[in-house]
Amino acid sequence: MSTLKETLRKKIEEHRPRIAQLTKEHGDVKLGEVTIAQAIGGARGVKCLVTDISYLDPMEGIRFRGKTIPETFEALPKVPGSDYPYVEGFWYMLLTGDVPTMEQTLEVVEDFKKRRQVPEYVFDLLRTLPRDTHPMTMFSAAIVAMQRESVFARNYAEGNFNKMTCWEEMYEDSCNLLAKLPVIAAYIYRMKYKGDTPIGSDANLDFGGDFAQMMGQEKPYDDVARMYFILHSDHESGNVSAHTTHLVASALSDAYYSLSAGINGLAGPLHGLANQEVLSWTQHFMEKLGGEVPTKEKLKEAIWDTLNSGQVVPGYGHAVLRKTDPRYTSQREFCLKTPGLKDYPLFKLVSMIFEVAPDILQEHGKAKNPWPNVDAQSGVIQWYYGVTEYDFYTVLFGVGRAIGVLANITWDRALGYPIERPKSITTDMMEAAAGIK
Ligand code: HAX
Image (cartoon, rainbow, N blue to C red; front, side):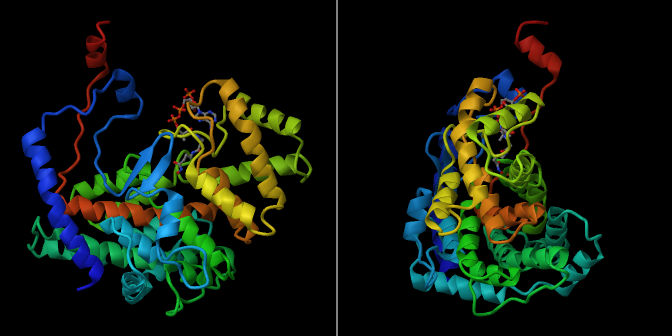
């Protein structure tokens, strides 16, 4: 039995009585009220989901298991010769809330290596899809195609479902799935964009290092991958990809069905796809302005053109955050400390947008948050390292997001959270409640 699984078991057993006590003894305590605006407006701010994996403060940004992004990077064991931590150690931390030692981290690294092998039929499936299929469709299809591997589904079908122990099967499915995602993502990339030249996995490398190697990238892209996957992992549980994964899992669907559904939500332009949109929008600007970094005046004009034509400024605004996303700041700091990137024209333009867009969005007066989110900064780093096929960017986001949502659904099973079923009402009922009918 691995240290991670045993530690997780202990944490689950300690946590269960807390949820039981809250439900049984304090179940009537109100956490808030729901207004008509919230019912119509996508349940914004309605406190009706529970997760301990991460928490998003509107002003401070994300904390993973109580740690800010800089604290997370600082605390976790680093890959020798690298500035960023092992993704596997981060997985340990998200699941247990504990910072693993190097030894505990390396145990997960070795465990994941054993789970990496992707069934051949997944590659066959990917090869049958038309090459112009969006890579998110390929990614989601590959995940759901592996559903036949689910330990949970097999156990359930054999009549062995046990509410107290079914988290273990979710844990096994989640580890099996997560370990394979870098292989699948890199395969899609090399098949679709690099003349069908997939590169095999290297058994000596960790999650981030192996992904970089399979992408055909040199150092420091391994650190870019580790940073990127950790930053994109979790943003509490109300965002579309996390909520969808949780919702589907609440029907006792297994990790494969649930993650594939969450990935489909991530593919929306208001969510994960925004990072592809930011880059095409920024590139388009540069092209329109003759390939040069524009003056601030020209840039202001172009941003107003975007708004006046009824489009959103991609990479700006957020449903919860009300300040600059610390995930944006973290990637900006990476650019500022990386020779070459700091003076890269595209980064200069992204920095200039940061200087002018918040004031314009404030003057425009619609967006509740005029500050940049994670997606405003991520594409430029990929572009700099030669990953210029921007419709692939959301797949990178998806590999990262899987870490958070799979940790969440493992805990959902452990705490026995029931099938999700909010109540809907009719327009007539709302009008009656408002006293206008
Ligand atoms: N540019 C222009 N208008 C914007 C805007 C932006 N960046 N952000 C919000 N608005 C507008 C909205 O369209 C809305 O207009 P209407 O009243 O006409 O419908 C109004 O401002 C109020 O919206 P809001 O309450 O501030 O924002 P929401 O919670 O409804 O939506 C979004 C949050 C992130 C979807 C939104 O800010 C947006 O569309 N941003 C651009 C796309 C983007 O960057 N998405 C990625 C978000 C991060 C993420 O999830 N990554 O995965």
